[in-house]
Length: 269
Image 1 (cartoon, rainbow, N blue to C red):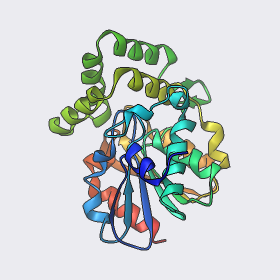
Image 2 (cartoon, rainbow, N blue to C red):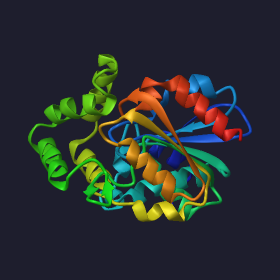
Image 3 (cartoon, rainbow, N blue to C red):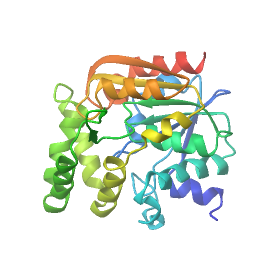
Image 4 (cartoon, rainbow, N blue to C red):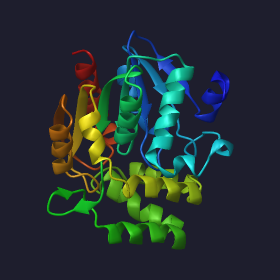
């Protein structure tokens, strides 16, 4: 078992801000904790903020990466639980972007003593289409082709996916940053995380969530349609959905003022 200092180094844990309530931020696929930097200035005077990188992402200790552990989202949820446990955190509000919505939910279901509320930014429990009952956004063949591109042309894959994720109408600088973030991740690790993200189906998990949950969905998101947010709201017993007039899958980067105010209002309820 890793000790506290090892966990902090392994997941590149950083603690900023001050307040009686703790916000724990989980980043999305291909990203790292740096993607939250637009939000933290609005929040750090009111809350204690814990930032971290999943093993294999950002400035985490890549030597601690285990392909078997991280082939499923449960492995990333274990990162969340271990960070909370080693930092003696409880009653945490977990803020998860994209796939981290489900990673946080897994951790919350497993350890409800650690997480008291969930805030999901552009989440999806399943990116696959299962017509006619569920439209996750992608046919399996399309996702397989996208992952095949990772093997053939990793930089080309990153350059294709980044504008799709950020949204074409948003800043070219943000698109370039996300493409660079994709490229900075080890291709083998990135593909393993991509498969865990895009081929998983965690719809069953939603009805098990007992924590109050806020869903922040973008009005125009190529990866997670508004209907996905509506589906999540319907399945989680105590949840609310806010649809933000925006394009893209990274609201915390493109619309930080709105997202941060939504977080403040929800946490203080």
